[in-house]
Length: 106
Image (cartoon, rainbow, N blue to C red; front, side, top):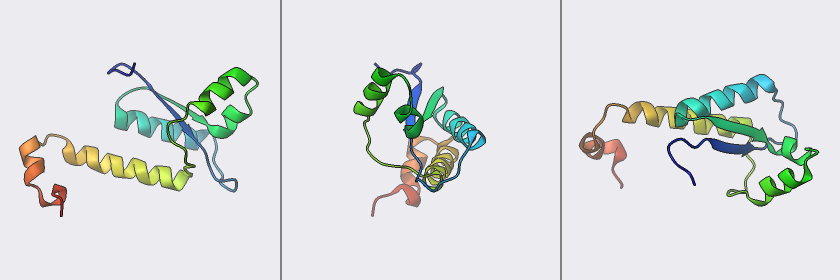
């Protein structure tokens, strides 16, 4: 059961021609932990598929909630948007947010 103390398990995959390393993964993990204010377990799909633990790999891959590949650029765009939203919402009341024209539906 997910609660306020739960961590987030995030599986990402990159396009075949993407170049990323340990530093990029550490940056992504750190940014996600800052945004969600909780521990993040970040793994790549490739590392799960190559794992020697067949049962773990099968369990992870068969229990995915979202089927999409996320390349580094797309994920960083998501992180940047989330940071902007968090900064905007910080110290604002529900009423202030509701009165802001940027949050109103067309």
